Amino acid sequence: MIINEDDVKINIVYRGNLHSNLELSEVEDFFSEYKEDNDSLKPRETKRIDDSTMHFADDEDKNIFYPYVYKTCEGNEKWILFMKDEMEGYALYENPQTKRMQLAWYHRKLLEPLSPDEEKELITCYQPKMRKDN
Image 1 (cartoon, rainbow, N blue to C red):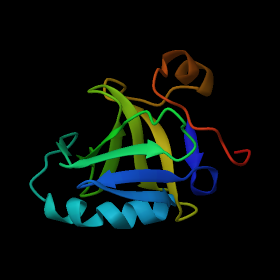
Image 2 (tube, one colour):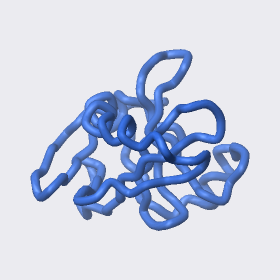
Image 3 (cartoon, rainbow, N blue to C red):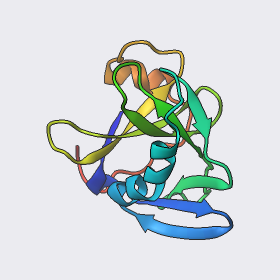
Image 4 (cartoon, rainbow, N blue to C red):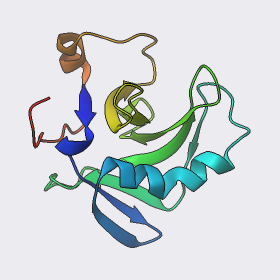
């Protein structure tokens, strides 16, 4: 599942303060310092961003996700993960073709992408309502 920047807004609670209705690019900016400060991460390693939670702005139940910095397998790229639990959540990254931020459903045990139908069978975390068709 790929979620484009125009499809969702994010709410972040950081150190007790609510930052609401953020665009994905604003979320990337918000957490950029944490990505820069975690140079010692090894590939596929994560580090929790303390005192912070996230939920989708359209989610009336406010299903909580926990932000992490994630070091990708190749190169020096780092992403922000929003994890429901130790296994599942969403990865925030820049699409190399459009240069815009996206969220992708993420499962820690998967080593290769799944088809949309296969993903639908496995997703157990909150799925935001899309504001636009993908």
